[in-house]
Length: 305
Image (cartoon, rainbow, N blue to C red; front, side):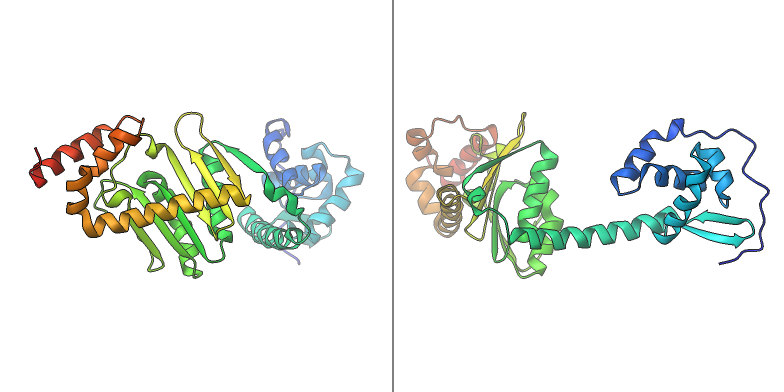
């Protein structure tokens, strides 16, 4: 590729790499060699430039720079723009990193599939620990992305909302998603016909410490329980006993929501609003303010003294 535009050389101002350490480090994490990263940053500062000019600005050995620039051109990161002397221009970073992003994503998908076939299945018997909100949301997103038939989630609406984009993607793949939701908002959260939402115990009221957890199961073979209060951490396993217990618990939440929704007045007359009479017997967790307000409201509605 030729270009009639000429350049006498880089700016006379002294350019050093001392302030570019973080850029160099990040470029190296994407597969650039040390010298390649330094040469590319130098080209962005002064391109088009000759190998001599790049060596002068970057502090790289001149003998190495000729080969480095050719390598950058082969990788599509730089382009020669004229021949005598040969000058190189950096390819726009947006184009470079969009291409790297797409190729890396495809490679990761391929490796995940290929490596799964040789994975040691004994690892599924262990419980894996995740810490911090970022890791917890990332793991739940991964479960949604890899599910084959069904995902069930129980949690408060503020966390479920963070997951809605991945929930919608899963639904569009044909995955059945069931949400058991703690919320007092009238805003509908179902984002797709394949997503079914149940209010916890048919009222969405937070009871005790239930709002402190997100619970997830997928395909009857994966389970994830996350504590989302201070010291956030979660446990994930494919162990049959672990998964079975979590899966059955969530299914019974669905059964209970369906039954209360259908027979709410009769059930609450018998067992108290929000099953408060049963909770006095079997639960040691203190009720929430929200729950107490709900109980009083329902007592007034049902005219129970």
